[in-house]
Length: 447
Image 1 (cartoon, helix red, strand yellow):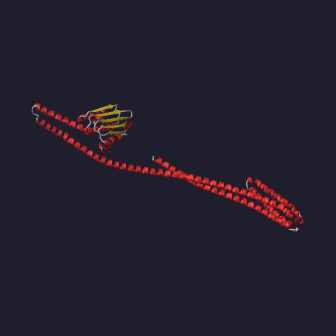
Image 2: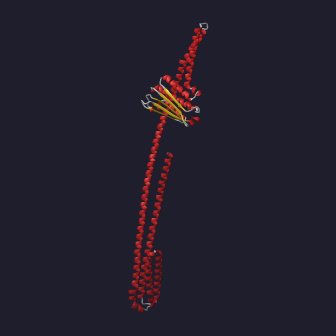
Image 3: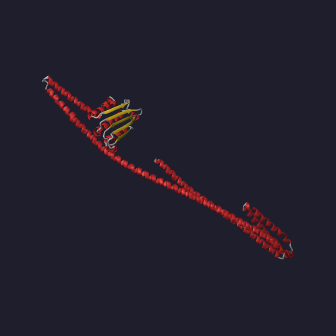
């Protein structure tokens, strides 16, 4: 789960950084494109306007030169005037060609009209260079009024139309650029909003995940401290249990086995002293010595069974459990029913010992605390596990408290879990107790 969260956060951060990079690069490129387009539009407008003004200026300059030529009575200046007009004509034609190559096809009709008018203008000037001074004096005023000025006004008017069209084109380009700016602004707003939302989401997830991890850390630390405290408490109880067991063994050996053996020794001394006594008295002493010997043997056997049940090794699990049930009933007077189903000969020794000790501990707890009137022990072997259940109808107890402080219950749980099994204890006040466990057969065999 932790690695999965780390991957998700890494991907989210990567997406966020990528979006910010895309946003920045896209904004820079789009802004640069808009700026270059604005610059191109402005330059195109300025060039077109410059060509248009130059055409009008050349036309006005040509009119002035024509007027000067017509008002000059000297025939010696004809060549000079003609050369000046030819230069103006050449300059005007160059400007017209440049304007035609620069402007779009939508301006072609107007440019053609200007071209035709300019051409007609120059053609109308050609005959004037053959006029005599008298012709100039008679025809110049009419020629200027009816030929030169109308054509000039036509060319200038057409140039103004081109200026207006150029202005409209500029305005259209400016509107398109403004629309592009609006699109860029909308794109930036959307991307910034998405980035902010994603950033807030990533930050929220990160804060939440950090808080969860801190909570888990604190919980884990508390569990570790509690486990360490339980371990120390268990170690103390284990030492106390060992000392108690040693005292019990010492007391049993001293009080029962020791006293019995002492009495046996005294009886043997008495028997030795009565070698010459009557046969009946001698026989009574022999019987008493046999009884004391049998009692000592029984005490030693009981201690040995408590330490390690030889019956479990010699006869198997089922007879050992049945013996436990009989001993429990004999000592407590509480009937104990033992039900065993299945064959247990192939079970591992650790599994059989675990089942025997768990049943032994459960019966011991029942005898000490339950005040039950009946106990049932059920052991069933299935194909892959062994099921064990010990139930009584006693007064019950608080499971949570006892499983934390009860040394016997902790030992039962550790025994079962060491073999890969599970142990559960169900009990409440007044409802009795049920101890259930299952141990995998394969785990036991492998051990």
